[in-house]
Image (tube, rainbow, N blue to C red):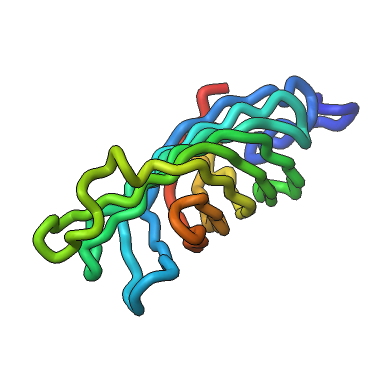
Length: 170
């Protein structure tokens, strides 16, 4: 039984023992605020939820695979995540802090960016998304959105969208 009700074989456990850890990856699409082209890459994320409504998230965005402007944006964040579970769906919002790294993927066409060491800057992100509990161990990140703010030069404000999948450890 879960919270006084008999649990059907096809349902997931509810609030009892809600401590969870999941880690996964996905494909990211970003709209940088320079040029007219979107850039794409990959992301890794880990979520530790220590209650039904509160957790922490760490994510790494390596948005450097498709870069028409020869500038990639990589970010490294950690911070609180607020959860709103509804059946197999978990809606969440988050506020993360960390670093942003503007990287020239082609030094000849990006002479102002010498290397990643001089472009690392403090950054923060506000965002949210939807996770779907496909099985007791597989979580589909249906959509994750982050609006980032970097302190680099006049402040970059990329919008990053990610879809992916995670493995839930417990």
